[in-house]
Length: 545
Image 1: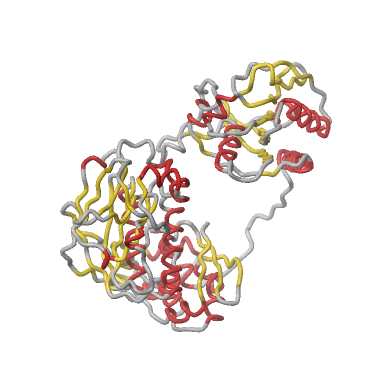
Image 2: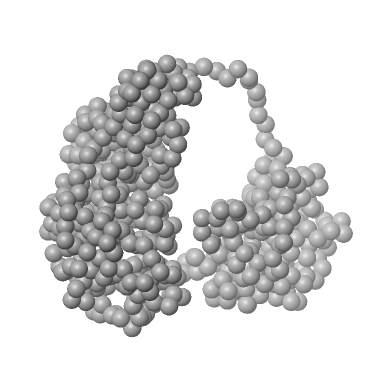
């Protein structure tokens, strides 16, 4: 979850109250205070509440919760003559763009830091590391509309942010720090997304870097927002959060016409909620009038429309409201959880540690003692990582997602070692040696198993190290085994061995095949060890779905 830094001076200005009151009530609006510093407080919010990723968003929520300013905030969007054209050649590259203009805004250093913070938080949570959504904020007074969003050749050049010389798009992807971080999103596309003004001045090379020409400073008064991406709903969500935050900061919003579509739409959504359902879920006895007043504290528009119904207007930035139950949660927050009646559960039980958890804990201690660092890779992966890069045949019984949200998350992981290699790829510029491990669930042939995987990379990583590590691990577990030559294509032939326990293959260790390393873009030798724990401890049986 993203950590948002809230400067006291700026928060006090926006909230109209003192810092201690703000700190005392932050946990009650759904935050976890990470640290309290001399000049700011750092807090963590749930990924669903993207509207709270800025100081302005937190201040807006806090004003309502404290009763300083309740009810919905009405956002005016004035018309403008600014237009964007989007070329068809971006249809299969990065087709969606949202835009707006913010005028007459006074940005001090804290406001700029807040703006940069909400950008990065949205890039991570909504944008999936900029792959799904990327945001650009520009000084509008340095360029001339109309603007063009089109696919450019890699030979196109401009001066990127933080540089003082022109670079081609190819050079930016190779040399610029942001280019090295995000070029993988577009480098294989036939054209590169680019935004320029009527005179050909480049504003942005999304999702990588803006141009130095449109850098935002404390003297910037008029801003142009661009939000590009591959998912239209996510693009518009990020645009609404940015616009409402900047309006709260004192700016005026003007519309932009993109291929004939006027945006942003900052109007609320309408819904009716049932008082009885709300009270049943929360265990309360609020009247319709009381629920309406509570929701006003949560910055909804709300009016009683009958003894059992409340009509609400959901703010445009609340992308997390998908069901009435989401609204009922806000009723509980607005009413203050401490005011709700508490009672002990009717059934009293005591828990104990599951044998598999105890086993995993013991294995973690052993791996840490061997000098390995525990990592937590994702549960979801894809065929490319699990099978293709590992030179292994796909599992026909792999558990696929019916509606995956991206190509990177299409199935439940069938192994752990490929995920460790992917982590080594992402950290290949870090100091060596790197030794990592993970123990957890995998799904193999539609059944859940516990597995252990270790990986080590450095110039001297070889079969001897893999053998010594596997032998030490088995010895510490008190299990006898016999190594036999392995034919696993993920490992180098003749430099890999299967771990045989009671005549069954319980795992494999050895040097990772060079072709596998190439596919993971790893330039150092790697050894890997993977073990099925249910073969070592037959008492811990697999679980069927």
